[in-house]
Length: 327
View 1 (cartoon, one colour):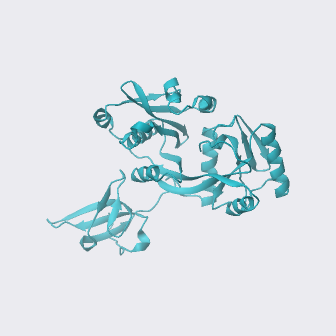
View 2 (tube, rainbow, N blue to C red):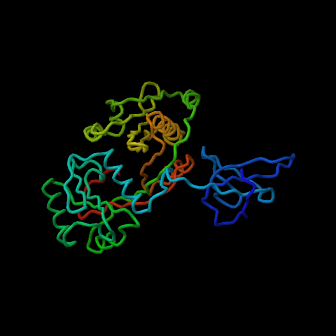
View 3 (cartoon, rainbow, N blue to C red):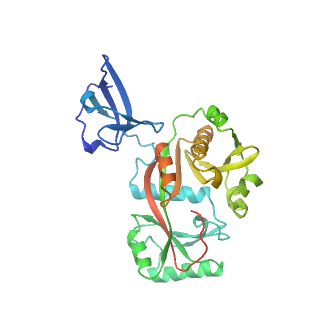
Protein backbone atom coordinates (compact mmCIF):
# COMPACT_ATOMS: atom_id res chain seq x y z
CA UNK A 1 0.00 0.00 0.00
CA UNK A 2 1.25 3.47 -0.82
CA UNK A 3 2.37 5.64 2.08
CA UNK A 4 0.16 8.46 0.72
CA UNK A 5 -2.85 8.99 2.96
CA UNK A 6 -5.85 11.27 3.27
CA UNK A 7 -8.05 12.18 6.21
CA UNK A 8 -11.02 9.97 6.99
CA UNK A 9 -14.13 12.08 6.40
CA UNK A 10 -17.85 11.53 5.78
CA UNK A 11 -17.32 12.14 2.05
CA UNK A 12 -15.62 8.72 1.92
CA UNK A 13 -18.72 6.82 3.09
CA UNK A 14 -19.62 4.36 0.33
CA UNK A 15 -16.03 4.25 -1.00
CA UNK A 16 -13.82 1.20 -0.95
CA UNK A 17 -10.81 1.83 1.29
CA UNK A 18 -7.76 0.29 2.83
CA UNK A 19 -7.33 1.37 6.45
CA UNK A 20 -4.00 0.77 8.14
CA UNK A 21 -4.51 0.73 11.89
CA UNK A 22 -2.07 0.85 14.77
CA UNK A 23 -2.35 -2.47 16.56
CA UNK A 24 -2.50 -1.97 20.35
CA UNK A 25 -0.24 -5.01 20.66
CA UNK A 26 2.34 -3.38 18.39
CA UNK A 27 2.75 -3.02 14.64
CA UNK A 28 -0.09 -2.49 12.19
CA UNK A 29 -3.09 -4.29 10.74
CA UNK A 30 -5.04 -3.56 7.56
CA UNK A 31 -8.77 -3.51 6.92
CA UNK A 32 -10.17 -3.45 3.37
CA UNK A 33 -13.79 -2.80 2.47
CA UNK A 34 -16.60 -0.30 1.92
CA UNK A 35 -16.77 2.48 4.52
CA UNK A 36 -20.32 2.41 5.93
CA UNK A 37 -19.95 4.79 8.86
CA UNK A 38 -17.08 6.67 10.45
CA UNK A 39 -16.41 3.62 12.62
CA UNK A 40 -17.50 0.62 10.51
CA UNK A 41 -16.43 -0.98 7.25
CA UNK A 42 -18.08 -3.78 5.23
CA UNK A 43 -15.78 -6.52 3.90
CA UNK A 44 -16.27 -8.46 0.63
CA UNK A 45 -18.01 -11.32 2.45
CA UNK A 46 -20.61 -8.94 3.88
CA UNK A 47 -19.12 -8.90 7.39
CA UNK A 48 -19.27 -5.49 9.06
CA UNK A 49 -16.24 -4.75 11.21
CA UNK A 50 -15.80 -1.89 13.64
CA UNK A 51 -12.60 0.11 14.04
CA UNK A 52 -11.34 2.84 16.31
CA UNK A 53 -10.67 6.05 14.32
CA UNK A 54 -8.00 6.98 16.84
CA UNK A 55 -5.97 3.93 15.69
CA UNK A 56 -5.86 4.99 12.02
CA UNK A 57 -2.38 5.39 10.56
CA UNK A 58 -3.22 5.55 6.85
CA UNK A 59 -6.42 5.97 4.84
CA UNK A 60 -6.06 4.81 1.24
CA UNK A 61 -9.05 5.01 -1.16
CA UNK A 62 -9.06 2.19 -3.71
CA UNK A 63 -9.62 3.37 -7.27
CA UNK A 64 -12.67 1.89 -8.97
CA UNK A 65 -12.03 0.02 -12.21
CA UNK A 66 -14.37 0.23 -15.15
CA UNK A 67 -15.09 -3.51 -15.43
CA UNK A 68 -16.69 -3.57 -11.99
CA UNK A 69 -20.45 -3.88 -11.79
CA UNK A 70 -22.18 -0.54 -12.26
CA UNK A 71 -19.02 1.40 -13.11
CA UNK A 72 -17.54 3.01 -16.20
CA UNK A 73 -20.38 4.29 -18.39
CA UNK A 74 -22.84 7.10 -17.61
CA UNK A 75 -25.71 6.01 -15.35
CA UNK A 76 -28.36 6.26 -18.08
CA UNK A 77 -26.35 3.97 -20.35
CA UNK A 78 -25.67 1.48 -17.56
CA UNK A 79 -29.38 1.35 -16.73
CA UNK A 80 -30.27 0.71 -20.37
CA UNK A 81 -27.67 -2.06 -20.62
CA UNK A 82 -28.87 -3.79 -17.45
CA UNK A 83 -32.51 -3.63 -18.48
CA UNK A 84 -31.62 -5.02 -21.91
CA UNK A 85 -29.68 -7.79 -20.15
CA UNK A 86 -32.75 -8.63 -18.07
CA UNK A 87 -34.98 -8.82 -21.14
CA UNK A 88 -32.43 -10.95 -23.00
CA UNK A 89 -32.20 -13.51 -20.20
CA UNK A 90 -35.97 -13.48 -19.48
CA UNK A 91 -37.20 -13.29 -23.08
CA UNK A 92 -40.85 -12.58 -23.90
CA UNK A 93 -42.66 -14.58 -26.56
CA UNK A 94 -42.43 -11.62 -28.93
CA UNK A 95 -41.39 -7.96 -29.02
CA UNK A 96 -43.13 -5.24 -31.03
CA UNK A 97 -41.34 -1.92 -31.51
CA UNK A 98 -42.95 1.48 -31.16
CA UNK A 99 -39.97 3.62 -32.08
CA UNK A 100 -37.46 2.77 -29.35
CA UNK A 101 -40.14 1.50 -26.99
CA UNK A 102 -40.14 -2.30 -26.80
CA UNK A 103 -43.55 -3.90 -26.27
CA UNK A 104 -42.86 -7.30 -24.70
CA UNK A 105 -45.76 -9.70 -25.10
CA UNK A 106 -46.13 -13.17 -23.58
CA UNK A 107 -48.90 -15.08 -21.83
CA UNK A 108 -49.45 -12.57 -19.04
CA UNK A 109 -47.07 -14.25 -16.60
CA UNK A 110 -44.66 -11.74 -15.02
CA UNK A 111 -44.64 -8.03 -15.71
CA UNK A 112 -41.17 -8.09 -17.28
CA UNK A 113 -42.34 -10.34 -20.12
CA UNK A 114 -45.59 -8.41 -20.59
CA UNK A 115 -44.76 -4.72 -20.49
CA UNK A 116 -43.32 -1.86 -22.50
CA UNK A 117 -39.63 -1.28 -21.83
CA UNK A 118 -39.20 2.44 -22.44
CA UNK A 119 -35.82 3.30 -23.96
CA UNK A 120 -34.37 6.35 -25.65
CA UNK A 121 -33.77 9.88 -24.48
CA UNK A 122 -35.66 11.10 -21.40
CA UNK A 123 -38.16 12.23 -20.36
CA UNK A 124 -40.42 9.93 -22.45
CA UNK A 125 -38.04 7.73 -24.39
CA UNK A 126 -38.26 7.85 -28.17
CA UNK A 127 -41.49 6.29 -29.51
CA UNK A 128 -41.07 7.99 -32.88
CA UNK A 129 -44.53 9.59 -32.84
CA UNK A 130 -46.55 11.94 -30.65
CA UNK A 131 -46.63 10.69 -27.05
CA UNK A 132 -50.39 10.18 -26.77
CA UNK A 133 -50.45 8.52 -30.19
CA UNK A 134 -47.68 6.15 -29.07
CA UNK A 135 -49.61 5.27 -25.91
CA UNK A 136 -52.67 4.51 -28.06
CA UNK A 137 -50.56 2.14 -30.19
CA UNK A 138 -49.37 0.41 -27.01
CA UNK A 139 -52.97 0.04 -25.84
CA UNK A 140 -53.86 -1.56 -29.17
CA UNK A 141 -50.96 -4.03 -29.07
CA UNK A 142 -51.80 -5.31 -25.61
CA UNK A 143 -55.56 -5.23 -26.16
CA UNK A 144 -55.14 -7.52 -29.17
CA UNK A 145 -53.13 -9.90 -26.96
CA UNK A 146 -55.82 -9.85 -24.27
CA UNK A 147 -53.48 -8.13 -21.83
CA UNK A 148 -53.51 -4.82 -19.94
CA UNK A 149 -51.10 -2.13 -21.09
CA UNK A 150 -48.17 -1.85 -18.67
CA UNK A 151 -45.11 0.40 -18.86
CA UNK A 152 -41.81 -0.41 -17.18
CA UNK A 153 -40.20 2.91 -16.29
CA UNK A 154 -36.67 3.09 -14.94
CA UNK A 155 -36.05 5.84 -12.43
CA UNK A 156 -34.84 8.53 -12.25
CA UNK A 157 -34.48 8.47 -16.06
CA UNK A 158 -38.20 8.47 -16.82
CA UNK A 159 -39.62 10.04 -13.67
CA UNK A 160 -41.44 12.68 -15.75
CA UNK A 161 -43.13 9.96 -17.82
CA UNK A 162 -44.07 8.17 -14.60
CA UNK A 163 -45.71 11.36 -13.33
CA UNK A 164 -47.41 11.93 -16.70
CA UNK A 165 -49.10 8.51 -16.60
CA UNK A 166 -50.11 8.58 -12.94
CA UNK A 167 -51.69 12.01 -13.46
CA UNK A 168 -53.88 10.38 -16.11
CA UNK A 169 -55.15 7.55 -13.98
CA UNK A 170 -52.47 4.91 -14.46
CA UNK A 171 -51.44 3.15 -11.26
CA UNK A 172 -48.18 1.76 -9.95
CA UNK A 173 -48.37 -2.03 -9.64
CA UNK A 174 -44.89 -2.83 -8.41
CA UNK A 175 -41.74 -0.95 -7.48
CA UNK A 176 -38.43 -2.79 -7.54
CA UNK A 177 -34.80 -2.02 -6.83
CA UNK A 178 -32.12 -3.24 -9.23
CA UNK A 179 -29.10 -4.48 -7.29
CA UNK A 180 -25.61 -5.38 -8.53
CA UNK A 181 -22.58 -7.15 -7.13
CA UNK A 182 -19.07 -8.17 -8.12
CA UNK A 183 -18.20 -11.87 -7.99
CA UNK A 184 -14.64 -12.55 -6.95
CA UNK A 185 -14.37 -15.93 -5.23
CA UNK A 186 -16.51 -18.97 -4.63
CA UNK A 187 -17.79 -19.85 -1.17
CA UNK A 188 -17.30 -23.13 0.67
CA UNK A 189 -20.94 -23.92 1.42
CA UNK A 190 -20.96 -27.69 1.78
CA UNK A 191 -20.48 -27.59 5.56
CA UNK A 192 -23.29 -25.05 5.87
CA UNK A 193 -25.50 -27.30 3.74
CA UNK A 194 -24.74 -30.25 6.01
CA UNK A 195 -25.54 -28.19 9.09
CA UNK A 196 -28.90 -27.26 7.62
CA UNK A 197 -29.47 -30.83 6.37
CA UNK A 198 -30.12 -29.81 2.79
CA UNK A 199 -28.84 -30.93 -0.59
CA UNK A 200 -27.80 -28.29 -3.13
CA UNK A 201 -29.06 -29.15 -6.62
CA UNK A 202 -27.72 -27.42 -9.75
CA UNK A 203 -29.48 -28.37 -13.01
CA UNK A 204 -29.72 -27.07 -16.58
CA UNK A 205 -33.52 -27.35 -16.72
CA UNK A 206 -36.23 -26.60 -14.16
CA UNK A 207 -37.57 -29.84 -12.74
CA UNK A 208 -41.25 -30.34 -12.02
CA UNK A 209 -40.44 -30.02 -8.31
CA UNK A 210 -38.60 -26.73 -8.98
CA UNK A 211 -41.62 -25.31 -10.81
CA UNK A 212 -44.12 -26.64 -8.27
CA UNK A 213 -42.66 -24.71 -5.33
CA UNK A 214 -44.15 -21.42 -6.56
CA UNK A 215 -46.56 -22.79 -9.18
CA UNK A 216 -44.25 -21.62 -11.97
CA UNK A 217 -45.21 -24.16 -14.64
CA UNK A 218 -46.57 -21.44 -16.96
CA UNK A 219 -43.14 -19.76 -16.84
CA UNK A 220 -41.29 -22.78 -18.21
CA UNK A 221 -41.38 -21.55 -21.87
CA UNK A 222 -39.80 -18.23 -20.84
CA UNK A 223 -37.26 -19.95 -18.61
CA UNK A 224 -36.22 -22.39 -21.34
CA UNK A 225 -35.92 -19.67 -24.00
CA UNK A 226 -32.51 -18.69 -22.59
CA UNK A 227 -29.83 -21.01 -21.11
CA UNK A 228 -29.72 -20.93 -17.32
CA UNK A 229 -28.87 -22.90 -14.21
CA UNK A 230 -31.63 -23.92 -11.83
CA UNK A 231 -30.45 -24.00 -8.24
CA UNK A 232 -32.55 -25.58 -5.51
CA UNK A 233 -32.29 -26.78 -1.93
CA UNK A 234 -33.81 -30.13 -1.01
CA UNK A 235 -34.65 -31.04 2.59
CA UNK A 236 -35.79 -34.58 3.29
CA UNK A 237 -36.30 -35.11 -0.43
CA UNK A 238 -38.53 -32.02 -0.72
CA UNK A 239 -37.57 -28.88 -2.68
CA UNK A 240 -37.77 -25.98 -0.22
CA UNK A 241 -36.00 -23.18 -2.12
CA UNK A 242 -35.30 -22.33 -5.76
CA UNK A 243 -33.50 -19.77 -7.93
CA UNK A 244 -32.64 -19.32 -11.60
CA UNK A 245 -29.22 -18.03 -12.71
CA UNK A 246 -28.78 -16.94 -16.33
CA UNK A 247 -25.31 -15.90 -17.53
CA UNK A 248 -24.78 -13.48 -20.43
CA UNK A 249 -21.15 -12.55 -21.10
CA UNK A 250 -19.76 -11.35 -17.74
CA UNK A 251 -23.15 -10.91 -16.06
CA UNK A 252 -25.29 -13.36 -14.11
CA UNK A 253 -28.96 -12.53 -13.59
CA UNK A 254 -30.79 -14.11 -10.65
CA UNK A 255 -34.56 -14.53 -10.85
CA UNK A 256 -37.29 -16.59 -9.15
CA UNK A 257 -35.46 -16.78 -5.82
CA UNK A 258 -38.10 -18.33 -3.60
CA UNK A 259 -38.06 -20.08 -0.22
CA UNK A 260 -41.04 -22.13 0.91
CA UNK A 261 -43.05 -20.17 3.46
CA UNK A 262 -42.56 -22.68 6.30
CA UNK A 263 -38.77 -22.58 5.82
CA UNK A 264 -38.23 -18.82 5.79
CA UNK A 265 -36.05 -16.89 8.25
CA UNK A 266 -33.86 -19.96 8.81
CA UNK A 267 -30.88 -18.98 6.65
CA UNK A 268 -31.91 -20.92 3.55
CA UNK A 269 -32.15 -17.80 1.36
CA UNK A 270 -28.55 -16.89 2.21
CA UNK A 271 -27.34 -20.43 1.46
CA UNK A 272 -29.25 -20.43 -1.81
CA UNK A 273 -27.75 -17.08 -2.85
CA UNK A 274 -24.23 -18.31 -2.05
CA UNK A 275 -24.93 -21.35 -4.24
CA UNK A 276 -26.14 -19.04 -7.02
CA UNK A 277 -22.99 -16.94 -6.77
CA UNK A 278 -20.82 -20.07 -6.92
CA UNK A 279 -22.70 -21.36 -9.97
CA UNK A 280 -22.41 -17.99 -11.70
CA UNK A 281 -18.64 -17.86 -11.21
CA UNK A 282 -18.27 -21.46 -12.40
CA UNK A 283 -20.16 -20.49 -15.56
CA UNK A 284 -17.94 -17.51 -16.35
CA UNK A 285 -19.69 -14.56 -14.68
CA UNK A 286 -17.80 -11.87 -12.79
CA UNK A 287 -20.83 -9.69 -11.95
CA UNK A 288 -24.34 -10.42 -10.73
CA UNK A 289 -27.61 -8.53 -10.72
CA UNK A 290 -31.10 -9.11 -9.42
CA UNK A 291 -34.31 -7.23 -8.74
CA UNK A 292 -35.99 -7.04 -5.35
CA UNK A 293 -39.44 -5.79 -4.41
CA UNK A 294 -39.02 -2.48 -2.58
CA UNK A 295 -41.62 -3.61 -0.03
CA UNK A 296 -39.44 -6.56 1.06
CA UNK A 297 -36.94 -5.21 3.62
CA UNK A 298 -35.80 -8.68 4.72
CA UNK A 299 -34.63 -9.55 1.21
CA UNK A 300 -32.97 -6.16 0.79
CA UNK A 301 -31.09 -6.68 4.06
CA UNK A 302 -29.90 -10.14 2.99
CA UNK A 303 -28.59 -8.89 -0.35
CA UNK A 304 -26.81 -5.96 1.29
CA UNK A 305 -25.03 -8.35 3.65
CA UNK A 306 -23.87 -10.35 0.63
CA UNK A 307 -22.34 -7.24 -0.92
CA UNK A 308 -25.08 -6.21 -3.36
CA UNK A 309 -25.30 -2.49 -4.14
CA UNK A 310 -28.22 -0.37 -5.25
CA UNK A 311 -28.11 0.64 -8.92
CA UNK A 312 -31.54 2.01 -9.86
CA UNK A 313 -35.26 1.52 -9.38
CA UNK A 314 -38.09 0.88 -11.77
CA UNK A 315 -41.88 0.91 -11.61
CA UNK A 316 -44.54 -0.97 -13.49
CA UNK A 317 -47.36 1.45 -14.33
CA UNK A 318 -50.66 -0.04 -15.51
CA UNK A 319 -53.79 1.51 -16.98
CA UNK A 320 -56.26 -1.05 -15.64
CA UNK A 321 -56.45 -3.46 -12.73
CA UNK A 322 -55.31 -7.06 -13.16
CA UNK A 323 -53.95 -9.90 -11.08
CA UNK A 324 -50.55 -9.19 -9.54
CA UNK A 325 -47.55 -10.89 -11.10
CA UNK A 326 -43.87 -11.02 -10.27
CA UNK A 327 -41.09 -8.69 -11.38
